[in-house]
Image: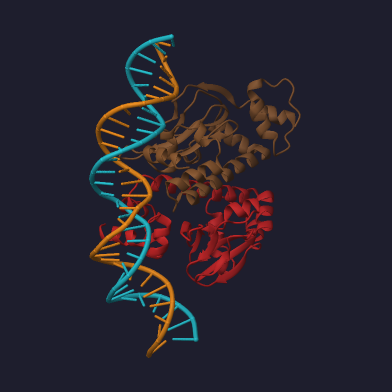
Length: 198
Length: 198
DNA sequence: CCTGAATGTTGACCTATGTCAACGTTTTAA
DNA sequence: TTAAAACGTTGACATAGGTCAACATTCAGG
């Protein structure tokens, strides 16, 4: 793609993402981009809370967002980590407008582009290119969830660590042991021991 | 909805499913239905195999389909069970046309309506109602996968059994212990013991 | 309606991993 | 810069649940 003239630097990664797969003329691209507003968030900031209804979808310019929940016993389970160049939100709540039952948290100081649910679905309904992008977000989300289900079941701790290294090479470098353990479904001690046996 | 005149009985459940949420005029409904062909399959029949590229989406009139994989150690993991009135296929392969890395199997004698990938995506691209239906299939698939991830991690065998009873009341009545265990990520012995402690 | 194969149940035993605690190191916020 | 808190690592110990085997039961298919 050609870099687009007179586009604020902050919109560049999203513009690149949008035109990566589908042709979008510059006018339409501008009208999509104008729905997104820059937001800066600090480390550990919670963007969406358990009981909250999710009204916003985020594109990550820099930083990292985590989706996790906490069960009755106080155990954290992390479902997904999203890095630069990816979309993230509490998708079931965003879709159905029911309480999220999970948290969306920045685990690093992050720069995000936020779009409201209203604008998002307006784009989906009026712009076929954006409709394709939403479909792609859903497809990727689904495929990732499936990989995770198959990748974790019937594997011991060491195999899970090898699996995550193979499928997401930067994951363990970017995410704390504690959070990685809550993603892999093992205790931090076990993760620590497994890494020493690699 | 009104039952549609002169519709073969075999198309009735799919017609009901299609008009349930979106208005579809009769002509368009007919053109959608005409893409589906009835298929009868026997118990244990494999519809899509591990290395195969998936070319078909199925709607279930009666019976039950299972999605599962087998790892190097020969351990089966079941990801999903689909019953009457639901769509099922090896979705990642259906989307990307790469080998499925999983099996789609009928676990009961089943009556299905099959649509080819070509016809399916032609409907998605030409019929906005069907595009919405595909979006809904993806959304439901994603939400189910997420529920499963959160529902299983950090829970012991008994809690998993309680969870599956609460979220899918008919599941244990319909699916063998062995397959249910491979879905819950526990051994058949443990499932058997957990049920006796309910 | 029979029969053999597959499945479910239960007991004995073993191992991976969780828990808890101690300790050293890193991070962070004032 | 520093003090306090959070985190990572490691050891000792406990236990849920896996494996294996024996037996009972169910069920599919002829």
